[in-house]
Every structure is written in C-alpha cells, then in structure tokens.
Image (cartoon, rainbow, N blue to C red):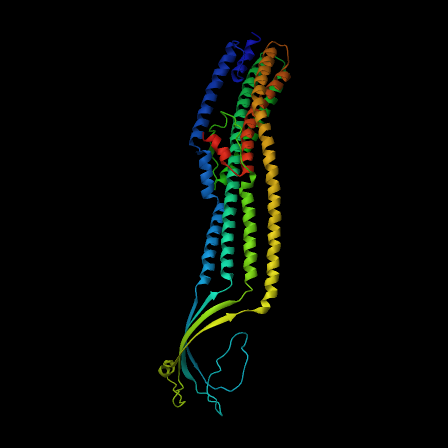
Length: 488
C-alpha cells in the first residue's frame, strides 16, 4: 500500500511501472485529468485559431513584404532609369527660345566682358547722343547641337551606368539571400522554442501531480513534512521554467514575424519534417565562390573600374554638328532707323538667319582635375579588391567551420535519444526506490530534472542539426541545399 499510492505519478512520466494506485489518490487524479483535458482543449482551440505558416510561405512573405528588400528593389529601378538617362546623351540637343523685350537701343564701338556668364546684347545704333525712347522687340531661335564624335566618352558613361545596375542587382540578390537565411534560422529557433514550451508544460504537469500526491502522503503521515516542502520547491521551479520558456518563445515569434514583414503575436510555425527525421549529409555543395556576398563584392570592383574609365575619358574633346536659325524683330526700322513704339511693330520679324557648322570643344586645363578624380577612383578599385579578398577569407572559413559544425550537430542529435532513454530509465528506478522507501525525495527530484534536461536536449540538438545544415547552405550561397531536404 505504501508503494502504490505514489505510483500515480508514473502516468505522467512515461514509461512507468504498472502499480495500482490507492483509491483516494485515484479520485484526485480523475479530477485533475478532467481539468487537464479541459485546459488542453482550450489550448488546442487557441492554437487552431492562431495563424500557422510553413517555411516556403514565410520565405515568400519575407521576399514580398520586408521593407528593406523593397528599398533594394527601388534602387534597382533607379539604376535602370540612370542608364536610360545617360543614353539620352546620344541624342542631339535641340534648344528653342522665344522672347519679347522692351528697351532702349544705344550702343558704342568696343569690346566688353560678360557679367558672370550673363551678357546684355550690345546691338543697337551708334549715334552722337543717347536716345532713351524704348521700343518693343522680338527674338526667336532654334539650335541643334549634336555630339557626333566624343572619343568613347558616352560609351564609357553608359557602361558605368550598366555596371552600377549590375551592382545594385547583386546587392539585392545578396540581401535577399541573407534575409532568407535569417527567416529560415528564425523559423527553426521559433520551432525549438515552441517545443521547449511543450516540454516545460509537461514538466509542470509532472510537478503538479507529484506535489499533490506528496502533500496527500504528508497529510496522512506516511511521509515526512520536508517532502512536502521539497515538492513545493520543485513545483515552483517548474512554473518558473515554463514562464521563461514562454517568454523566449513569444520574443522569438515576434522576431520571426518581423522578418516576414508583418508583426503577428499569434503566428505559429508548422513542424513539417524537422522532428520526424534528421538532415541527411548533402552531396557536393560546390564552391563558396558562388556565394551572393562574393558576387556582390565582385560587382563593386567592376562598377568602380567602369567609373574610373568614364572619368578618364571625360577629358577627351567632343566634335559636334551645329545648326541654328533665328528671326528678329524691332521697333527700330531698318529702312530709315525710325522708332515705332507700338507692340505690333516690335514683335514683327524684320530679319532671318541660319547657321550650320562643325564645332570642337576641348578644355585643356581640365586634365588636372580629371587626373585627380581618376586616381581617386583607382584607390576605390583597390579598396573593393581588398574587401573582396576579405570576404573570400571569411566565406572560406565559414565553409570549413560549417562542415565541422554539421558533423558535430549530427553526432549530438544521434546521441540525445540514448540520453533520453537513460534518463527515463533512471527516473523510473528512482521513482520505484522512492516508493519503496529506499531513497529520499531529493534523489527523485534530481532524476526528474535529468529527465527534463534530456527532453530539452533532444529538441535543441535536433533543431541545431537543421541549423547547421542551414549554415552550410549559407556558406555555399545555395539555399536549395537546405530546402531540397524538407521538400522531399
């Protein structure tokens, strides 16, 4: 009788020994089971109403909703527009203007300098006295300036814009890949945390049942009072562990939902096949040189080289075909130099002209500025080459480290079932010895803690095995190494 009354705990510590419980403890457990069944039903209903998401859905949501990726996409569109803008330099410049003026027309022979690039027209009559009678005038021009030969300057600018587009595209692909890796890792961490909450909830259920049974035994005088105090301490400890696991799980849920672009407090992840199998050893993963981060570093070098060439060629001259036509009217008549102050006489064209020619422009002193700008770009090229080598070293180290971690994580995940089985056996033995009066409650509590630790280790090592596979995929720059194993 003394041994059987405590064995009801074994119903919540599977597997247990098949002892018969006492009548009064049996009634206690029946009531307790009803409350637990109701609690589990409520939790199941809440879980069903919570949003559940699979990994591929999370990846799609993150790709479409995350604001930083949208910013990178806008940067790509901006680079595409810059290419179109630079290509318009191939077109001739066609400038038209029409003006109506009202002013005097006194002039004098002699040269003058413009005022900060602005020059007032010196045309007008040369007379012995100034005439301050103002007249209306008109002036309409149309001019075409076509740079038909520029020694490769425009091509260099277009190539620089295209290289910048390639850089922005590689930047987006790298950010997308890194973000997807973060989503997968957050998914696995949330899955681990959800499992840990379940484990701590089971641990609390065991502590609850054990406390009630121990309290009943102490009340009946079959156990010393210290056992009740120790059981209460273990019960409080189980509550704290559950609360801590729930806190971590909620925090990780928010971090995961943030990566999908929309915060959800109730988001749940599907376990899929992560806890039904361990990841298989992947085949040849290829070279880490295909990593998106390394490709982005290479495009930075290419873009800097293209910019330096464009700067270098900007010193060269341009050869333009120029054509222009204009008409001019004035209130001062050409026939007799008489003044007409009405608007109609001023805006009517009196003379027409046209001009065609070839123009060459070459700012020879600009070579000093261009040379310094070119050297600055060359230093940027060296900078990006050094960054490329740094990235290459880091990825090489990550590739080798990920292989070591993957093998170690697999070995740990294969050992945890052995640990869990041993912990269950040790608990069953400690429980039987405690019921037989051969050991104290402190020893049994240690076996309970060992069992709880083994259950947690099983979830953690299983999740870490998948996370180490993700690390290999991240180092190789190929997420299919990971996704191919869960899509089978």
